Length: 397
Image 1 (cartoon, rainbow, N blue to C red):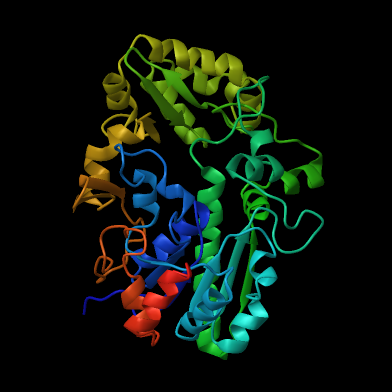
Image 2: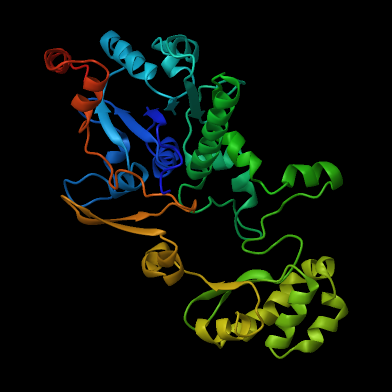
């Protein structure tokens, strides 16, 4: 029977900008009812970004898909009490303020869970709730730098380079989603609701490709090598007559097939290239040979020779996100969503990569207008029309 795996899960979403909203968008994709709590008047800062003039940011549209929106000022006592009332009916509360913000306003985890012992409280911040840097501000580039990722990324001999897009924010958002799902499973099993403390520095350090483990064990540093791999070759991005192609040969068998495909079978027997270690040591020379072969050919010619109909090597043309909107593979897998929008005409969202059998799409396709669901959500919590009007007058909602 079709359904949604998180049907019945209620999420209070106090997050803003990218990392937290992305995490709760994933929960909405999976069927959770997500209520986004925003500041009255202005809302999430991310509403004001790339967009048609006078419209809500398209970035906001994408990472807040499937949610409801209410406005509520938790810095005001009446707003604080309203949030606690909403928390009584929720399964999860998610926030990504600087460490300590909610506690300073009387909404720390112990207060929230006193009101609702079954509430999972999930916090994401730049450096977490503990340690000497707790409470410091952070953005994507700060997390990439502090987590070790920036130092590993960039051209050989060049400066550190930030990973494209808001990589740290999305990695942090994914870890936050995993933590929330684990905490919900644990609550169902034990009856105990956890408090999640996620640091974006921690999240980025966790994906630095075993670099700390390798250095601690054998003293080898993960130096910047651009698109190459530190321990094998060829594993790189190569220029063609009409773009770029990447190819990876992380086994001796694949390397020999590459040599055959480019008409240089003798390279597979060459002492300079006979195994991973020596290929890595001589990768500049080896990559030069591959680059020369690719430079006079088109992407299509190269992929015909190296792809499934040829040598069957792991390879791909380098495609930009805008080119992928009509990519047959992504379209076939539902990764490109197109939805009519009352103001924008049509919006294109990145789809949900979690393909679960027998599940329905999220209940709401689009992102919410600021405060669009305030009256409805508060009515569900017992706030009548007269009380709502008074809250509006006082600037609470």
